[in-house]
Image (cartoon, rainbow, N blue to C red; front, side, top):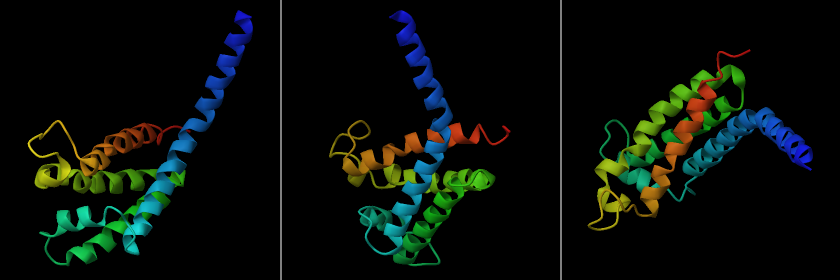
Amino acid sequence: MKDFFDTTDRRIAESMNRIGLPALRISLGIIFIWFGILKTIGLSPAEGLVLATVDWMPIFTAETWLVIIGWWEVIIGICFLFKSTLRIAIGLLAMQMAGTLLPLFILTEVTFQTGAFPYAPTIEGQYIIKNLLIISAAIVIGGTVRKA
């Protein structure tokens, strides 16, 4: 019985190892393409947060920045779908994540519960903090770009 469980466990782990990185890349690709398109067509639930975050930025209106960020995310997503463009995806993601984390510092009244900064995020704050997982996933994927 012990051999059966050991063999089964080994097969499951090998399968997870084989499909894990491609699944991670494709998942990131889908998420970035999907969420980016929502920003470009005015259907993103994060629209208000993004607009409030970029309202101070020069050159374009906040609405134009929202569309630019949306297309930026679509490009990130497409780049994650192909091994040959992973470095581009990770570089663009690094720049995008810097902006994504900005509301935690400049919109604390939106990202944290009243009087509970910095330990009790609102749903918007949680939405942003979960990006730590995306950053970690990109680091894992980035660690594979030199492998055959």
